[in-house]
Length: 369
Image (cartoon, rainbow, N blue to C red):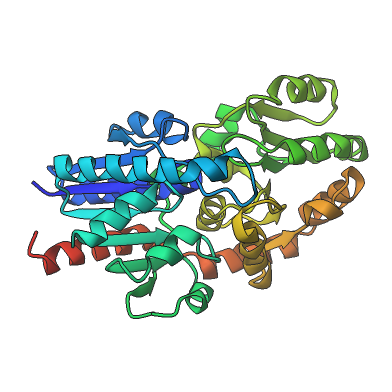
């Protein structure tokens, strides 16, 4: 039996790419044993079991970039994470280890590389994360989402640009079922607002300020994923607004949400952008300014340069400006069409399949298949 470990977690941006690859791998090899590795604090503790995959937990924290308690605790957690990962590798005896980023993937992929277990990293961001850059020289393959990312690596022999994997359910939903499930009007322009799986307080606050500048607009409606913390307040505000809306704390069927959208107002995490591109949707991006190495801004700049998105920095944003930018885009059908076409040029429809091809290739090279 072939055994594969997917290591990565914390945010949906590291979890869902692993799930997309795991689904495709299981489709090809139904008898394979697939194990995910994450932490109890990350979203993986809730998400992975819902997809029917085994989840193993390790204790580790990220390296703090400032002088605080976490910085002093880091060596202890690193040793603890390495010890737990070593025991896990001995128990599972994987034939392949795949890292999808984040600090949780580092000890597992690092030890697998030292033990000569076939290893692959899938990097989602245009600016590669520190885990990817540290491990690039040790692993068998580094699969990048963007061509521009190659310049950040000294050794490029093991690099391949294959795009970001997207779950099948994202692209399989149709707008007809989406309008029905969200109780929205198919004849109105739909703005979809979301700030990642947990919502964005900054985006939520800014758009609440925008509402008074949009009340005269008759041809728009809002689909809003707020996150749990802001849900009730935003729901109450939208109940008073003349703008039709569907407000939810979390949207399980993101494929349906994308399918009904004419414009998406979003952060610029790699997973969100991969899904937006795959659904060929125009977007107005507000990068999270405190993301590691400012990678969200770099992601947004890449899409903006390619004509697939517009960007506004958080420091430049206020309610009036956000309302104006949103309506200028929603009313400009030529611009929306141009952005949709740019998405088509960026989307690699076979990314997930190509990544699993690489996994299969590594297994065959080690005579595991």
